[in-house]
Image (cartoon, rainbow, N blue to C red):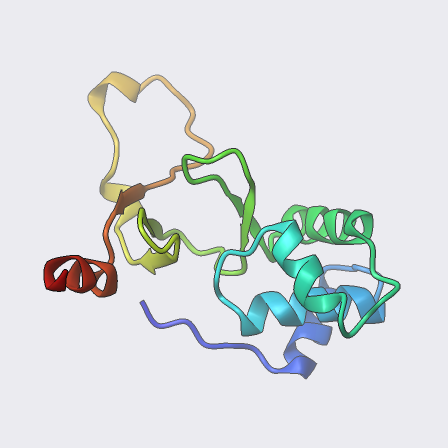
Amino acid sequence: MKIMKASYNDLVTELKNKEIRLSHQRLMILKYMNDNRIHPTVDEIYTHLNKEIPTLSKTTIYNTLNALVEAGLVRIVTLGDKESKYDIVTDDHGHFKCNSCGNIYDFEIKMESLGSDELKDFKIHKKDVYFSGLCPHCLKKKIEN
């Protein structure tokens, strides 16, 4: 899966196209999401951006992320834990979470091939694929110990 990062001007254009009011805080949140494809939580975004924007509140982050989700620029990912994470990659793809380091990796998957005859009378709005285990780095460390 190859995802290009957008330029700052592209991000401004995306917000304008989705009719989301431009503000420095909203742009910085979207820029952080674009530059750090780590599926961050609100707390992680706050911790990182609070250094640059001391007036930033978690409420602003929640409100901005909700607007970005509603506009289709970001999606919410829940991976077996209670905390919501946010993903700037909105195309269909799967997620792998390492049980050791906690990193989340995107992987390409053909979502249209997922289904079941048992669901033929259902209207499916969303498909998620989530695997967990050990990433190659953590697996290598475990074998070496």
